Length: 176
Image (tube, rainbow, N blue to C red; front, side, top):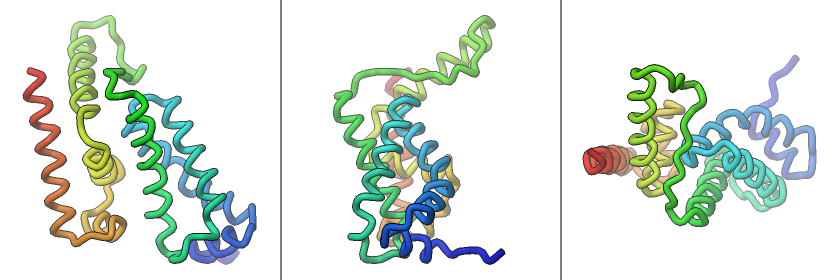
């Protein structure tokens, strides 16, 4: 079986090939959901964002000029939709804790408190800072790849990552 290149799948999907688009979605769905979920903190919102982003991707794919930038384009759609959700929330302090914590023990109560503090601090960050932290630390995207995806120099990417970490640190310290 011959492996199909992503660029070929994008080209075929842009021409209306549903199977090619389904292959693109299948390869990117988990990461897209993890990105949205990490940025929003609420699974239901993340599902909605990912669904909306893939629908918009299908609808607007023929307009994508540089087919090699599909992943960056999709990621931008996800981030923009996360931005919309966060704007609608108007920075309400919804805290979503993972159900994996056993809240019966004191240690897990402390962990739940730490998670709540971290989530609150993270929610106070700008969408751009959240996006950088999620991509670099959750998805382990190297700085060089992140810079290429964002279309900015590596030095600028490193500076923005530093600024995002500093903003998170300030938010955590302010909550103490």
